[in-house]
Figure 1 (cartoon, rainbow, N blue to C red):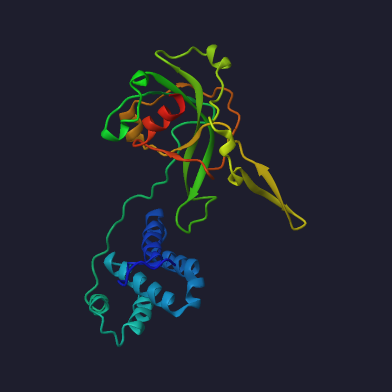
Figure 2 (tube, one colour):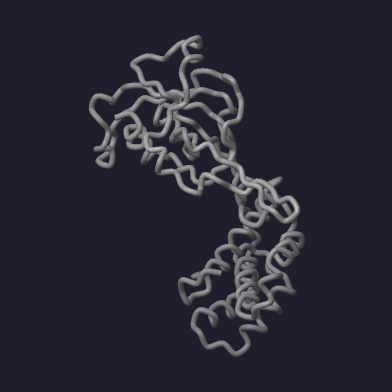
Amino acid sequence: MGSWGTKLYQNDLAQDLKEEYRTYLKIGYSDLEVENLMINSFEEEFEEEDKEKIFWLVLADQEFKLGRLSTKVKGKALNYLENTETKELVELKNRIESEPLQRKKLGKFYMKRSLYNVGDILAYKIKTSSSSDKIVSSDLIDKYVLFKVTGMVRFNIGYLPIDEFYNEYPVVTLLDWIGNEMPDIEQLTNIHQKKRKKLEEKTIINYLPDKIENGIVKWKKKNFDTIQYVFSLSKKEIKELNISRVYVNVRPEYVEVSSEGIPFLNDKNINNSITLEFK
């Protein structure tokens, strides 16, 4: 647990608890199911008394604020608040001992999914839109570049099992092409993935553990020769940037399916990142 403050919510565990509790409710579990899931998820933290205290106080606070405070959680929290003199904890004690609040509804649980499929070709017109884009070369503005979706990566959502609950982002590879108009489908067969300029700067991060056999770690070499990004743009940002899918499922082989070492591409760095590769 990273500690970065003295107040109840000024530490990683408390923030995780708050997020996890509300996430379970949004998914649609019952109050009792969520309470049991929380206890099962964080029971390892109970080995340290300070962390167990944070668990019950945060859970009690969250249950109270959402109109779901159970007798069990209230009792556990009050045990830790019995002789407290800290202003914040005194307020918490008074709060959970007061009249219960009305039950509050939470928004729908949302998991991010890629708008594209592996093999799709995306077009983007380079432009400059802010002071942070000063690096963009004037001769590249208004020219098109192409990305190919070469893989998908999944990121866990809190403590939820990643095989069922995850956010998904496409991995895109920059193609070695830039022009004023879109190439046709036949021309794409002669367009390759753009190679990195300084291959000698590759490091050990290019190698990742693949599997363990008889206690020996087997390593696999990652494809770091090409220019790849994790496409973290939202649907709204994609629309604003005018990124469009120009070809669907062109040779949909996977090239890279791990985000390790691959930079995230967002609306703030897309122009500069592309310019560094083509200027």
